[in-house]
Length: 111
Image (cartoon, rainbow, N blue to C red):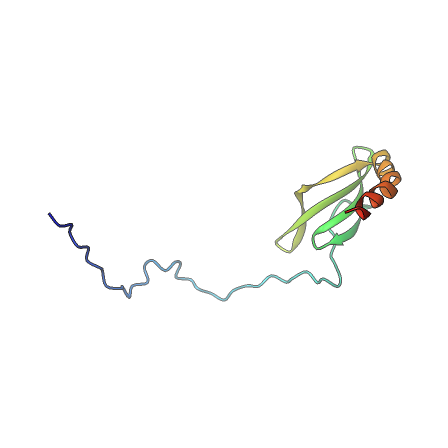
């Protein structure tokens, strides 16, 4: 027995599947200016330094200890918020990192 042929339905002019009916004007968020990077908002006294795009180095205090953080931020409702990607170093860990910079630079030059 031959298979039954499927009949194609004619294209419908109905908008029932086209999504919401309230098609208002699109609201565009203001973009962050690359020439004047906006740092993340933190506690009063925190300082932040831009690395690139949405990555910042911050110096802050956490539970009575001064911390140096390197973190990726994301934008939500025009505000930069900390993302999951990042690390915080204590002052002594940051000092050890600074002491290792010449060795790191040498390793980088080999690649």
